[in-house]
Length: 89
Image (cartoon, rainbow, N blue to C red; front, side):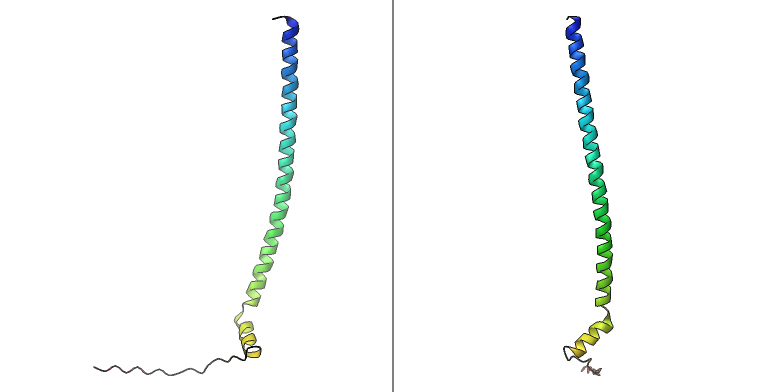
């Protein structure tokens, strides 16, 4: 092969390598940006989950449920009953 063809092939390889490097670097930068966005979204969802958990705990308290049952549904707690079990032999 002549010297010019070798230089041309080397030039094409170098330029191709540079394009590949730039493409990969751009892809890495895009992935880093996506990770940052996902981390922010994760923090927001964790906070939202904590808020909802607190709200569930507040709404499921026994005294609140008893109050709603008695005031809105006219429910009462029944008096305790005595149970007598007779066993015949």
